Length: 199
Image (cartoon, rainbow, N blue to C red; front, side):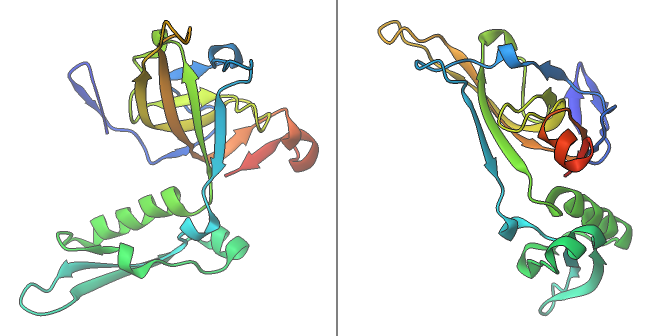
């Protein structure tokens, strides 16, 4: 959920396509260079160990005894076929959930968040991008991948103070994660994957 101009805007699950709307487009020349004229753009791929594609979600805690009164189960078949069954049973125990509908919604949400290993990007922009905040959706062109218009969800943004002595300007530091869905591209994906990449 986003809070903008006094209104609550409900955003769909974090699954995107090439036509999904974004809060801001980050083009190549907006990303700053370091002192050696190297672009300040770092990419880290989340490890496969973080992937979850089978969930037994325990809910309706038994407050008078032990354990939970209900369990909803689900599997995300596409990542299961790619990576095998990957679970983290201790991460899906919800004391205050009491509805099967909500439990199923949570399973769907976590599959979209955790079903695939995705890239996390860190980059620096000028101060005219200070409006970017956690939860915003950006469109970027990751220079390390030559992918066009990748949608990312901002995890955090902050101001890095400059220095007159070091001749360094104030900047806006952004950390964002690639969102799951179809990504159109005209970089290496066009040659090797037929023009689209699924995340």
